[in-house]
Amino acid sequence: MEQIKVIAYADGGSRGNPGPAGAGAFLEINGECVSQVSEYIGIATNNVAEYSGLVKILEKALELGYKNIEVRMDSELVVKQIKGEYRVKNEGLKPLFAKAKLLASKFDTFAISHVRREANKLADRLANDAMDKRQ
Image (cartoon, rainbow, N blue to C red):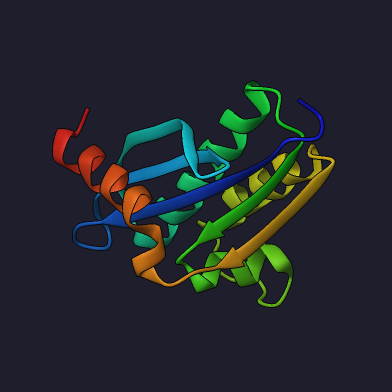
């Protein structure tokens, strides 16, 4: 499994900001979805939900034994903070940022990039499904 490069798409959303929030993400290999997560995270801000989507998919990829990952997200804030281009000023985001960085360090290769919302529709749908179900 070492040589396989998995692509992860992650998203999060909040209805109310803060409000009912969900995280959604999936792993893809050669264009095929191999795993997905959709989880209601309670009352949270949009940025907390975005980070939660990232953390959950990194945990899932590690759990499945993947060593090389490229993450694509439509949250410019999260992507730029993970890359070190923006400082994390919000106290509520600092623990999620630290957890995401720790998880990212466990991969042999890790990359993260910003994509347009249109390129992240499935992850968005998974986040919205989680908010709809409120489990």
